[in-house]
Amino acid sequence: MPERSAMRRLMDILAALESHPAGLSARQLAEITGYPARLILQDLNDCLLDTDLASYYPLYVDEDEEEGPAEGGQVQSLDTRWHLETGGMRQPPLQLSQAEALALAWLMQEYRPGGELERLGQELLAGLGVAEQVAAALAEGVMPHLCGGVQLQGGQVWELARRALLEERKIVVKYFARNWQRVVQWQLWPLGLVFHSGNAGWYLIARLEESSEIVACHLGRVQELRITEQHFDYPEDFSLARYLRLRWGMDMSRPETVRVHFYNEAGVWEKVRREFAWRGIEGLKELPDGLLEYHGPIYGVNNFARWVLSFGSSAVVLEPDWLREKMLQTARYWLKIYGDNVNGPA
Image 1 (cartoon, rainbow, N blue to C red):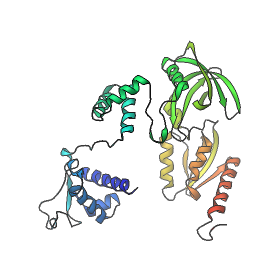
Image 2: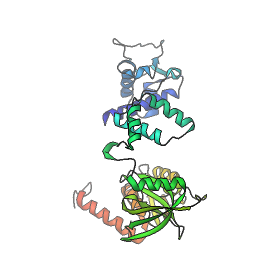
Image 3: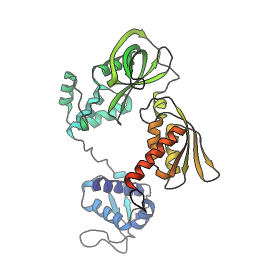
Image 4: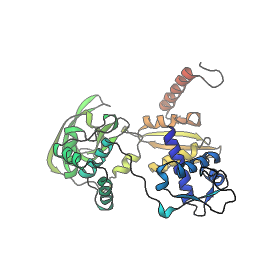
């Protein structure tokens, strides 16, 4: 989207100016940001003269520059030094649609975060003008829909699971376990409700009473949920954030030990290290022949395989054999459909 790209570019330029109080020329900004100097100069002129952003980001140029602005006020020289008066900056207003504003206001009312965040939220909501609609939505128990028809609540099962989670009460569910292709009945300790944007579905993360195993139940496959009178103590050794970070997507299958090599090209090593660091996964090591290797457990191997495929020929799966063969089959299929750069379709 061109508008979003232009705005992203301008934000990068303004961020560079903010970190250099002595000012920067378009040429210097080009060296820092990587954007063409002429394009940067045009962005700065547009921001200064032709948009309302000037009232939020006060820009000015050195008055003693040898080559001043041309007719019409536009700066022409790539060497003119620009400054951003950070003391006078104000944040532009949020550009929310009515539906987005209503959803945000509803969430802030229903799930009050407390502290500084709640005060900030109240200041934000004061200017949205949806107070009456929020009050009506809360009174009627109606949750606003977001883009694409996604609803932030999940119906009766969701409400029961949320109640049990807040009250730390055990539940009994009848659940269609897709991996086993049969209905099971479990007694669970609810540990978290997670909305997965990949499939717009809600999941209940819970501990099995019988085995202490952690499971993830798609609420769409819960056939029955009953709250018991029995309470439980939330496990001190369990972190929902840590549990989810380890996994690729919502694939809750048992971990698989994999061995993958990544080539040091097109920024692959940086991307891999950043991803593993964010997930808290250790085990990456550089090999003498210029390869980065990971040999260890992966949770959600099918989604991990899709992630590895995004690197194309810069990543190679060596183990397990079944996963390597699956990746080869996918590569052969792509080659058949799209061919290669030299010979065209196979």
